[in-house]
Length: 119
Image 1 (cartoon, rainbow, N blue to C red):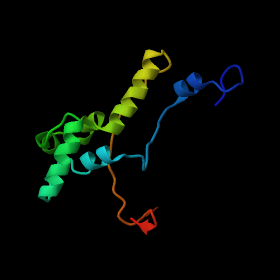
Image 2: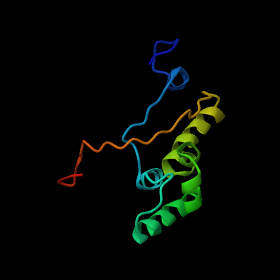
Image 3: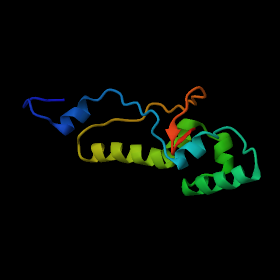
């Protein structure tokens, strides 16, 4: 993206952004939490794991049952990264962007080749 000078201008490019879609970008904390929003753990091991990840996000199992994805996302590791970047742009006077929606989609028909295995 070039701006008035005809040269690359990062802040100008950020101001011109209309939409950013993050797809297949997730870490364990965000995946573990968002994949269980509105659902109960199915085992004691899953309950323990969720409690650990939720604690890191300042959330509880009750929050996971009662809150929606859009409310929980900002507390996850990926949510903090995204909101931190938006805050940095705002604080630097570059742009006033915001998160308008968060959705979790699971693709059960496609696998990725990870560490020599289809997962």
